[in-house]
Image 1 (cartoon, rainbow, N blue to C red):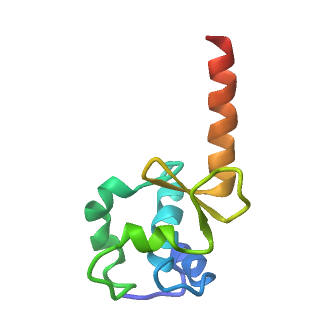
Image 2 (cartoon, rainbow, N blue to C red):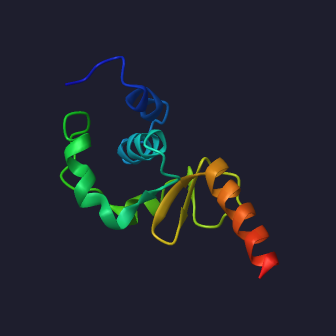
Length: 107
């Protein structure tokens, strides 16, 4: 059931690519649940959450890698970062990277 009150759906609708929208929806939802990224290895568990909004049979990670809004290296300026089979919003990827860098300096 689609509603206008679903902030995750509204976020996903900002992106024109129909291939990117379900991923944007899921990463937004994960952030609201306290997670920093979407683990693409666990997508089969997430399909139920998006089935009522997006008409897709499967989520294709290879197609995601080809999206212009997704970069595979953290130093590029794109909204989404795909790193080690996890999808991040750029801001949260940068936060996590900075924290890890500081932690490793203490070792």
